[in-house]
Length: 191
Image (tube, rainbow, N blue to C red; front, side, top):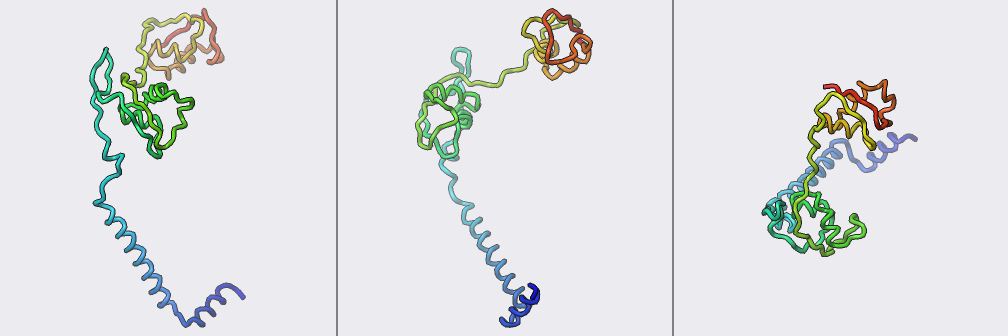
């Protein structure tokens, strides 16, 4: 006996037809949608979570040539789901100060902090990502120094490390492998 025949026989026994089943399923959909709409609108005017209420703008003041958050040092109780990067963003408006928080609290592993752990947030200058190096080679040639590599030379020549391919393409006869350049090689720098 196949499934369709079995289902048809079951429906005959239950004396249900397609119209009754459709009505039942339609009613079920209406109930589910009503519950979802109610849940949505019942939470609309609820106060925000505590962490969202306590967030304020960071006021920076200048101290010894650095911009330092005015309200530090401070204590912070770790909430569920937080990590040092996000805690740093909250107090410094920069995640890069996570290193200072880890150092201040003598954390052996900065990736492991626990809920309700109390951290001291130190009063230090706000860290930002390093600015790209300005071009410092103004000539069309460069004598490779010990420890140089094409990325570093491109930073010095163009202020953009991604331009290393331009140097390599112009000097392929001298450096067949872009990962190996020898000190004392005179490179052409296309402009």
